[in-house]
Amino acid sequence: MVFMSRFLFQIVFLFLISLSCTYQRPQNTDETRLAMDTFVTISVYDEDKSEKEIQTAIAAAFDSIFAIETLTSNYIDSSEISRLNRMRAFDEFEISKPVEEIIQTAIEIGALTSGALDITILPVLKLWNFDADSPFVPEHSMIETQLKKVNYKNIRLHSSRLQFLEQGMEIDVGSVAKGYAVDRAVETLISMGMREVMVNAGGDLRSISGPVTRGRRRVWIQHPRDRSKMWGYFPLDTGSVATSGDYERFFMQDGERYHHILDPKSGYPARRCISATVTAKSAMEADALATAIFVLGPEKGLQLAEQIENIDAIIIFEDDNQIAYVVSSGLKNRFKIDDGLNELK
Image (cartoon, rainbow, N blue to C red; front, side, top):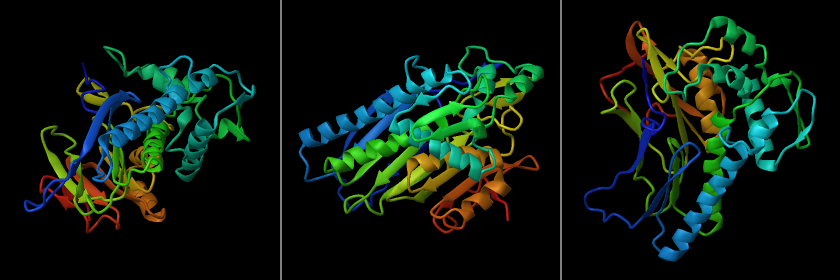
């Protein structure tokens, strides 16, 4: 049994600046810190700002990320989410505006995807214990018992007050909160006068481009089975990207891969996809939909991406023991792909 460290492979794809050889690379300021259980890099490309102005803005952006982490992390016992998870059924809990926005978005996307995204999955996720040194497959009977507590429809949210309608419910907002934190960091940078910025939280990424960087940014997507390779890229000036993959946190048992993205219907790792990359206007939306589309699988996931305005997706999966992919129409003509994967027609 081999457990892959959650830090080692969390950078799902690289966001690089591609510049022509005749163009002089602009000066940029980057800073990387550990936050939201991953490495976060904030980059600013503003030639008319002083170094002090840029550093002050970056520090403020990181503060906004740490504030969201303090509210939402299940690893912080005093966080709002941790305290909420200790609440009894039908007790009312007053939540902050950021937590309300995160949970409301999760409920909406849960409804949109027929429960493919369900933040009440935590009781089952705890059984798998992917953070342990030696994780293992839980007993089926234990999964079945805990699944009875999983249903986003049993969250009642009204006017910043929340109730659980089933005893023992707990939520994990990790599939939404990291994207939300990226959005808040970008908004902080813009509010402080920065015009060309990028925030990358372990693959949840948002970019704002201007004259310096427009047309020179690319999203490179990691090859899903060869960590030494990239398998394709597409340009992205202003927008957000997130990827969910079965290679981020997983362990092997009896030759089978067990990863952390659980299907809320079964309580077991979702098997229809290898990875799902989603582009959206906001990082929170991209983050949540990447998880949902991964669970839905290539056919239903692609249909969902085509139905929602300003959403696109690249979905990698196995087809007859071969790695294949599908791409939504908005990205079809914008990305370059290696010959190592086959597009399913």
